Image (cartoon, rainbow, N blue to C red):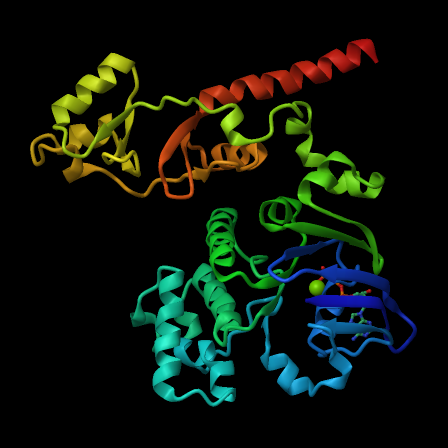
Length: 379
Ligand SMILES: Nc1ncnc2c1ncn2[C@@H]1O[C@H](COP(=O)(O)OP(=O)(O)OP(=O)(O)O)[C@@H](O)[C@H]1O
Ligand SMILES: [Mg+2]
């Protein structure tokens, strides 16, 4: 889909920002560029949509040399989320999202519908269409920046630190949202980040850059297992916790396969009985086919016991889940970062398959500390 052949960029004044990069990106692939400030990430991105022209080398999209295409037309076919959101302050959200569709002369009605539909993707209502960027929170603005890049359905999207300016919680949820979105839209994405956690979570393949050169390219697993050199090791230093248990990788390897559940048609007192029997203070609510619907806990039941009688009346659906097959380190990070007591594990159809509890993480952390002390003694 996208091929960089021996691409270099030397800026006026002789600064070699990018040095002989070779890279093949498959259709539908999610690639993260990562590396320290000034290593050439933005420069590489901008060469792909010809905002910057390479000093040497060639770039092909679907086999066509981009230098032989009209740069303006080329850019309309490539979504671009710039570093620092970059919404136009004097334009409404609708106008911001519809920028490229307008350039492509879509009729007004179609542009409006598309903008609505996109907002829905990120759980924002049509009431935002006529607002201005400054009337939105930082996280919402960032979402609009991403939507704008998706508006004209380009097959290729370039994103330069799109979540850089967000607080960790908003960032985490936007990442989740975006990863899901990408799975359904099947776009090719080149994504720049400073943050290894982000790269590991999102990327099919990570490309680590240093001083304009590729130091290593590989799947997150490849890179975590076989870092090419000390520079890469330093980048992934934080991962030690889980590397010390390489035998545990996927979330299902340490989840409890028998979470305590209840169905929505049960009464609150039946729910309390189940909690008592199993000595738990929270129940996952599933339907007859074991599809996860939400949860109830002792607090919710206590607050509602006068007003409601069925589990279905009080269940909460704002539940954080992970999918089967998720890397354990992602799950651990999520649980610890968000201070959650547990995370239900579901399959693609949201059937409940297990639960990872905070308590079960103690074993991993214990082992990693023990492992280190052990090394100190014997090494
Ligand atoms: N227009 C320019 N003229 C001269 N040098 C430039 C220009 N733009 C970038 N550079 C230099 O090229 C190198 C790569 O810059 P680039 O913006 O690609 O880095 P980056 O990896 O995106 O950094 P950051 O993580 O800080 O965004 C840097 O040393 C930078 O100072
Ligand atoms: Mg940059």
